Length: 334
Image 1 (cartoon, rainbow, N blue to C red):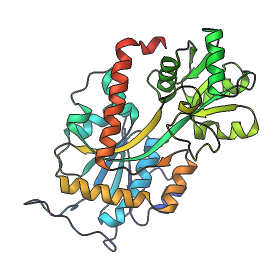
Image 2 (cartoon, helix red, strand yellow; image 1 turned 180 degrees about the vertical axis):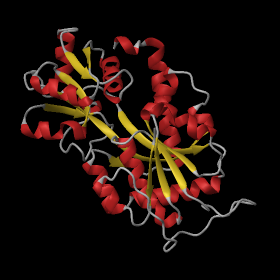
Image 3 (cartoon, rainbow, N blue to C red; image 1 turned 60 degrees about the horizontal axis):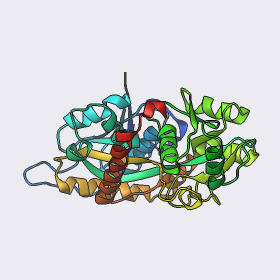
Image 4 (cartoon, rainbow, N blue to C red; image 1 turned 120 degrees about the horizontal axis):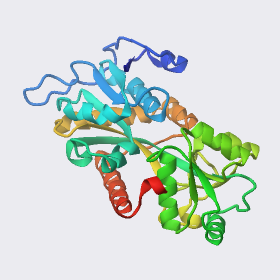
């Protein structure tokens, strides 16, 4: 089963209400100019579909906010099509190269292509439109752990190899990959304790059953403020507005370390460039809207709105890091 979400200029109230099924007709009023590409009909001449992960996560929220923001200027309905994450790339890969089927995916889409066989190549078969948003992690510890900075955590871990443990989501999840990269770059041995999701992991961290976690900012901010957890650093390359005052891990003990969740838009690789330019423009303009930026911040995500080339460079960099990592690292043992 999959869900459809359709957004238009009157869908904002439905988004706020969290209605599971919304169908709203887009008015042509205020629509952007039609785009003709050679002999093709003016674009867009029919609804645009954004394929993304099941409802409830950052992928879904990002797709909804973008759909809400671009429906009016495109002059068409924008449908958010929620599918199982494992099939999303395949759907867009097999879609016509006409700009009507987009993919909103996180870093797991890029990195996952290195861990399992797929009929497509992420760089060859998909055209990046924009890195819409990113979500840095926060490295947190239980207050009983006697460290306040990343360099102190590293020193403690080296003094007691294997004695510290960290809470992790499933193999290949953002929390797991952030920890694997940290352990490799810092040269430390911290044992993984696996959980089915972030909620149970955070609960056990607060209870002191585990000691360290590489979490999303949204998942732990309230617990940091209450003193139930202690934050050491953010995992982005620059300080984040989502965690004011926290240094980066790179600046406080692990030079060059960066682990963020990228949330980006793709379409079929052979889509005409003029259509990609139009989509990029409308998406970035939507991301500049203050109310949309505020919703992203509230969800623990920062707006980016990069160029297609900048997004491609970020993807290639991420692939390069993990290709090297996977040659020497058994993720299941980390």
